[in-house]
Image (cartoon, rainbow, N blue to C red):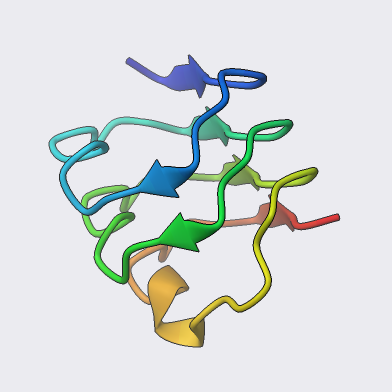
Length: 79
């Protein structure tokens, strides 16, 4: 799986297990949900992720360590 589109699914929490074992994922679309919490290790296995879309959610605070494992990340949308 290289691309995962979960836009507009009323998701409110991304826990550390939901994206586990998706190390080949390149693009993740989580925009237009109701996400208010992303657990610290939620992106732990996404070492090849290039694009991350988180716009139009309810995120108020984002811990900078959330992105530590995203070594291939080139673009993130937080609008």
